[in-house]
Length: 160
Image 1 (cartoon, one colour):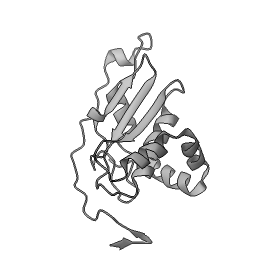
Image 2 (spheres, one colour):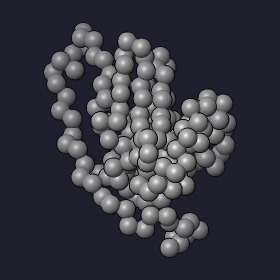
Image 3 (cartoon, helix red, strand yellow):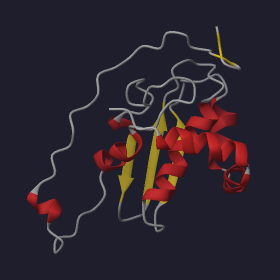
Image 4 (cartoon, one colour):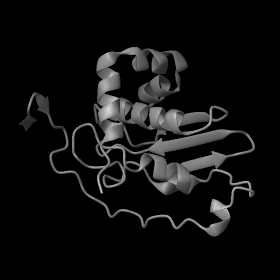
């Protein structure tokens, strides 16, 4: 099926329920208490990124899941694994780039952010993971106006 000038690969993606909103505790609001990042906080930063093909969030499509996020505050590392909706998704690199850019824009620069496809969930998993891990390729992508425009659209459209 073609929509506009795009051909959709996944015409009827399966939709999933959204997680309950996070309840912020009094301790988390206390400025005098050290509040380390956790997986739920990272999930909340990326859950509302929209899919490049559908007006749906990565959470609604089950592309990002809380259990696939690891945070190591002591090593300043955050790793996110995501699962494209279909195993031959041509938008997987763009989705991964959107996740990476959202985290780079939202987190302190001390964090090393890793974004990968969940093992076994994509036909080109190794190639896409290589692209997403390559700092020079990511930097080049962020200098391409067409890619940046598309990523910004994915990041700007929050759906409730």
